[in-house]
Image 1 (cartoon, rainbow, N blue to C red):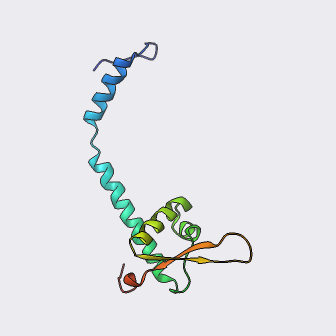
Image 2 (cartoon, one colour; image 1 turned 180 degrees about the vertical axis):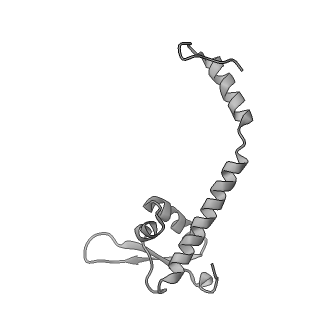
Image 3 (tube, rainbow, N blue to C red; image 1 turned 135 degrees about the vertical axis):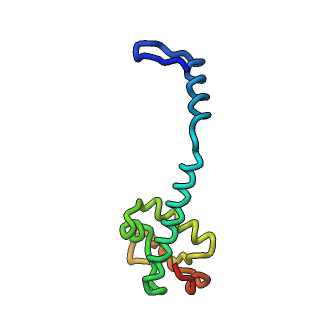
Length: 115
């Protein structure tokens, strides 16, 4: 592969050549494996957290995020995924004003599972 200095102008064929070389030399299997391991651990952490709390009192995505040190959006994505799989139950908690809060608790099928 040709080496470039910062003063040289690149054209599209140079960029395409570099891109092809880079994609051939990158091993993504270790990256996806570590992402998968991290996701699985986060799922287990969430389930363990919810199992600790009284089953009638669930967690909001923000509460899960605060407890585990992850973003609220990440927590919500995992909670929704597990709710769709039947591992969690979603219910609404209504306050005096404003929107109801989504709260999650362990699903009936998961109550007996140890983490």
